[in-house]
Length: 336
Length: 266
Image (cartoon, rainbow over all chains, first blue to last red; front, top):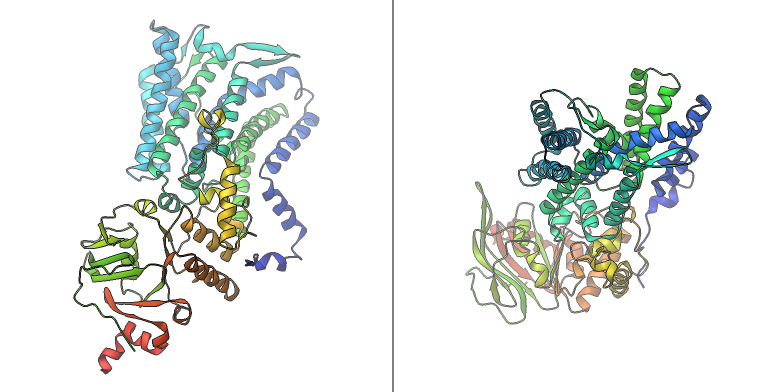
């Protein structure tokens, strides 16, 4: 029997500092860090404000996190392929405007939604095609798409927000009250989407291919993975999620506003990175993104309740992003 | 020192030659990477391919594995002319390649790496509808494969980036060997390894040859090549300069052919 020697450096590091050992155990369980951070925030804010843990406020945080959560799920898929999507907010807003405009113009709401979701899928698939086939950097492609689609949204809406009546388009905003906490249909929708993609990434060949493409596209190609198809597929599926995100958005606030979601691309990246997914691709879990989205939601809400100026909220969020990516970089350098 | 120099690029492929090439040429701009290169890998041998930097070894190996399409010339598998235009084509012909950069996905574990691009789904509802992978079946095959290579102690579930260099190389070789390879092409398999790990990989290569698999070993390590190879293909100036048997040659002579010094002296 051959014995392949283990990494010689592992044994030599018996004297490593406690901090490094702590970091190592955190790396072993990628969701422990984000979950602890969320728990810590909840504890701190519940002391900082009496209103934080009230049923009304919990409902508010959950509703505010729904759209971000759905969009961040698509962002996770794209970041796993070593890409990034700056256009997701613009795509979602355009989908809400198209749906609202069609519905108000007399198109059946179901058809209006179908067309809006199709638009979202088409726009994102086009991004994926440019990334995979034309080999443009995702940052540039989605920056261009963001700019174009934002302008299209203003043109299509005449720069005005369009209110829609209660109906199929606002369905996901309906719901039931459980112990005073309002649970909209959007919440099970979001949880189902996360469960589905946890399964896809963890247990299916396509999921493995997404990680492989993000980690080492040349290795994936040599192994027989159709890298370009996988990439385009990821952007298409992200587009579908943005379409559902548009539906969630109309459920929460029954109007389509071209000024909405200006910061959601950056917030979604924050949620993904806080959730432990590597910004450099190939590593991460969707459940982490759900926690990351809740961290972003809780942080905003808690800091507001604690009476902290929104500019300071931005400063804190920005520092969090940089700190999290630094940790990721550090752990990458240590482990390769 | 006996040599089989084949300057005429005879198209006849000797019986028992599993992978061969005749008169391959390839030009990149002004650089002639291959100028009538020939190649013969016999059944069940370890053929080392040596040559100075820029001799065109990489281009030859890329052509033989479908990663590059030569400008002219012909490649033969089992004596049958083939045209290779895609790296995935050779998998079906039973040719495995281990690239120098290992070509593994560091974040995926051993089982996922071995089965990347050819995963097994569960036969049940869960596999057909939810497309769930059959981890157990894949782990079984992977375990058998590794045991056959004498690598039973490598973890199946650790991301491969956390394995040692020798273990990663073993995984890469196991990947190349998987699914009934008859030919294994190894590009500098020990270049990045320490002494102990090199010995393990060399043992592994011998074991593979003893299982009847033909091995083409590209290496810069001439003492190692003289120790392990059955024959040595010496590449120079974009073509095969000589094929020598290690038992009948010395390191000096090999270097002489590689650099052309002995031709000048002669």
